[in-house]
Length: 342
Length: 288
Ligand SMILES: Cc1cc2nc3c(=O)[nH]c(=O)nc-3n(C[C@H](O)[C@H](O)[C@H](O)COP(=O)(O)OP(=O)(O)OC[C@H]3O[C@@H](n4cnc5c(N)ncnc54)[C@H](O)[C@@H]3O)c2cc1C
Ligand SMILES: Nc1ncnc2c1ncn2[C@@H]1O[C@H](COP(=O)(O)O)[C@@H](O)[C@H]1O
Image 1 (cartoon, each protein chain N blue to C red):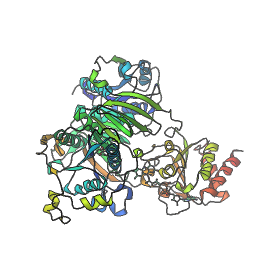
Image 2 (cartoon, each protein chain N blue to C red):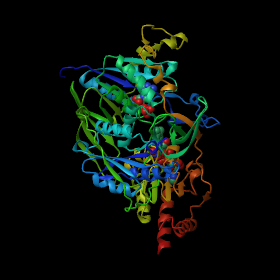
Image 3 (cartoon, protein in one colour):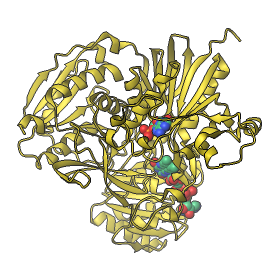
Image 4 (tube, each protein chain N blue to C red):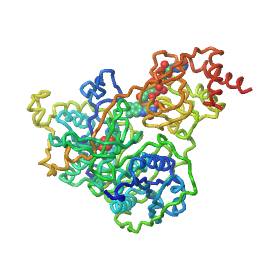
């Protein structure tokens, strides 16, 4: 096999004029995976309008090649023009692996690209590894296959999916689960302009209004998270969660039940349908510990759980279990912190 | 109301195990899912898609056809949509369809849609709760060569030529317009699905597909109401692109999730113990 077939590519998503965190996480992961392929290059597809300068950052995180299409028609993300450009570029260079962030954009785009290329795609992975795969029916062994690891059935099982035959092997990966490497701005790579044109037939959809706020809540990047669940009981009580978060310099997280009952906004939700987090410390207050919640926070360095029910499943993953009422325990924690810092 | 247009809408639904209400016997010893221990339901967001289609019908006039690919028992999911207001239903069922991944499934669904009188709007749920892939919608749109509007929360305007819709995300929204035909994937925040109507329940509870009738099924008082069944041959599918042979993704391994922390300390809710905990976390620089 020639070198050309062994490259790992990442879709460099642009968000509010910057490269999305998840894309940088994926480039870091790609460099790690590349160690298993000898002689593989890391590539990124960068699409948008006036985004060429962002290539520097992609090089700094480890890209060897950036494929750039800068066009005013690409200013807003739209499925069809992005699909056209990416499929043509991938077709031409045939990378071995192509990764997308499992963001609203990535999950809109990647399936369309995979369908166009007639290749397999695994959604919402939480881990990626490289290893051999034996197909017993065909009695064939494939080397250096991408293991695409993801929760399924509402987080109750973890499945490892492979695409042994089609290329590229494609996956979308959850934001926040891969570790971002240190940037090194002395790294340089090659910038390639994509020459393919956008066919007019791909431009029929118009974006009339785009209103997504910059994330005010940075759960994925938080070092400490204080999260409240339905057990907190009321908006009034939820202020205790916010107060503890404030004194600890932490972000506020929540279970879906807390969001659904209006205690706090959706961007704070941790879990399968919320954000996956990996803080040094996660304090779960009045959260029962449904698997859909646990899959989003189990990788926290230390987990403290406060719950009145000693049987609550959250205690299974907790390093420190406090059986008690949040309304009594949290003020004590705040006092303890203040006393100890004094 | 103004002139009625009668849009043709096809809603794709999937029957899924109810992963929301998992019981302990749902997992087998070897870590695989015991599907038979889970009640089968219509995928929740597919009911939001159906509701959106029915709201178009109420507002502008439409004929709503619901389609599912699955085993003969998926006819129950179709009955659930008849009870809520679907005009027509179709079951795509064939042994050759088994073990299809999203690429093969979207191919099969596209073959069936191409056989229908071409719909103006195709609707899917955003994602199915068994796999959470959210891939079928975009892949089906690609195979039909039509634009897609994912995460649809509302249809803001509709004419025989164009649709304007709002897409919703956790951190905001987007308003887009595109020509018809188009494919929409619908999120749970779009609407509150209507419950089955008692009248329709009475009218359609005996609707059965041919496979169910052969089995003697649920009684057959009204043989007139039947659920059409289409096979690979009926929709002219290339068998190489269906089922296992048309599916590039393979499941290599499945493990059940055992989330347990290695070390666990019980901390009593006393002032002293909580203070010690805080001190420990500070000393090891978990908190600063
Ligand atoms: C497809 C799907 C996706 C989902 N995605 C997510 C997700 O992303 N994130 C998520 O969190 N959930 C998700 N869920 C929901 C999940 O299954 C649970 O319903 C949810 O996590 C429960 O939230 P909770 O623990 O706050 O509430 P509950 O389960 O109601 O638990 C409340 C807990 O508080 C305790 N408690 C009560 N009073 C007090 C008190 N005064 N002091 C201390 N403890 C108290 C109780 O003992 C109980 O354990 C999803 C579900 C489905 C089906
Ligand atoms: N077997 C199927 N038959 C009909 N529609 C389906 C099928 N599988 C998935 N869909 C549709 O595609 C959506 C997304 O499914 P998924 O990609 O599996 O998450 C579902 O909400 C359904 O609307």
